[in-house]
Amino acid sequence: MLKIHTVGGFSEVGKNMVVLELDDDAFIFDEGFFLPAIVTMQERDKVLTEKKLKSIGAIPDDSSIDSIRHKVRAQFIGHAHLDHVGAIPFMSDKYNAPIYGTPFTIAVLNSLLKDNEMYLRNQIRTIQPNTSFYIKGKHKQFLVEFINITHSTLQTSFIAIHTEKGVILYANDFKLDDNPVVGLKPNYSKLKEIAKKGVYVLIVDSLYAPSDRKTPSEKIARHLLEEVLLTTQNKDAGIIVTTFSSHIARLKSIVDFGKQLNREVVFLGRSLNKYTRAAQEVKLAPFLDKVTISTYRRQLEKTLHKVEKNRRNYMIVCTGHQGEPGSILERMSRNQLPFKINNGDNIVFSSSVIPAPVNIEQFGIMENHLKKKKARIFRDVHVSGHAGREDLRDILNLLSPQHIIPAHGGPDKTTAMIDLALEMGYSKKQCHLMHDGAVLSL
Image (spheres, helix red, strand yellow):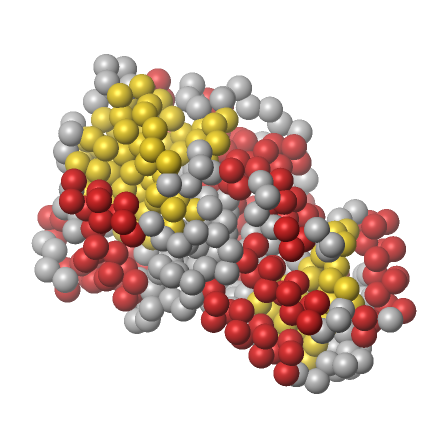
């Protein structure tokens, strides 16, 4: 009997976790944070524990798989975003199973462990993109493949497990970007190969299934940044850019254009330090070699005093694109750092506001502070890392799965994915609307 346990990420956007059960063996895909809860908790409690995190719904409730914990043979991480990897330090060592991820993902995981002064008893194994390997089950071996796909962070993978019924493909998250700014293109040849073998179950990112579009390539975001940074009057103005810290390709574009403006680029903030150091560690970000990165109070203040004296020679890249309390831009907006935002300074949001009530509220508060300072605000200089409805149509046509499980969101997202599949000729028996803590037997 094959069972899919949808532990987390099916009733909300975040805290992703899926478990595949195959008779005597089981495999975990992702263990992630629910980020709005994490932001709220960190405001009042700096020490994070599994018990505290579960009490506020910040990590998956894996009690639904307690009875099969002994079956778990491996824990796979699809990519380095916190809603997929963030809960690993707090949950993974209850499973007697190694952790697998690509080099960048594992570098980020190791950084999380260091930040929380934690050590895992699990073996941590680094898997190169587009690699196949075997995992030993109780009575048989399973072929596993990490298939390179594009997303808004480096070395994201679809994870395929070959079973007697066909391939189980975990495709959460992705976009189809044939012109990535950093990294490899989607491995379409491997996807066609497994389609020929037969995809039995597709667990698929459905965040933008309701959106009638094809998600643009990252090269479009690069063009948008170029337009704002290189054709807007900014000769004597301060320039502040904020984006997702994990978006290394976006950071490359920002640094490139900073150099074209003959400005020294400075990075400010702990999360930027975390992800950029991970990228440098695995030799994926040579463009960062000459970038100043400041994180702690004295470093920040020293850097900002220097920038304040001659802002026309610098570009600040900092945390705060969601208006998170305590982030660099949010603190600047409240005059809590030694850099004054002046009338006419350019503030570029190479990001979108994550549509959760806490994010919308926090961003709105910060934006109001910035507008009072008469700063020029450039919002949504950004393209998404998630597949739109037409990309999802293409992936269904490419893979022709027998069963579809929409993931990465509540019913407002996942129902739209099912509607698309039905529109394309799939039957209701092939489409499975799941929720957190549910199990599907096939």
